[in-house]
Image: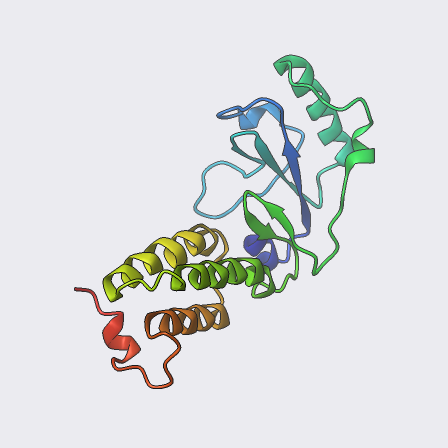
Length: 197
């Protein structure tokens, strides 16, 4: 949604809600006063995205915040969902440009440094590989550890927001150092090592 808004230069906001109850889907027609986004190739306008108890509402520049507050009040009353006693405005955090927020384990925001959002993941991968090194695994063991650690830790974030080239290079370096015990001259090229069997 952010990429679409940036490409089309459409202003808007993403409102993230954490609900007490989990809902599988909501009828998009239940929020007719919101415009959301009409994306070519997608039949329904994009207003709401639900995943477990996390809700993301996509408001474009023509949408009114007062309408959203009324929809949320009606939704809470109809569904039995609890809301804070404080007014919605008191709980709102608006992330300025360049400051990512975490949503569904991905980092989102306007004009964010995508590479910087990968730093915690790179640190986690490197720390995990260092711990595994202490057990002196065999080459086959290292192969499995790389799939489990590097692949497992990075897979979701890569799918959710893509992997910058410099992050890919940092992961390749970590893999190479782990496989060859930090040897200056590895006995096999990385291209050969990455070949499918």
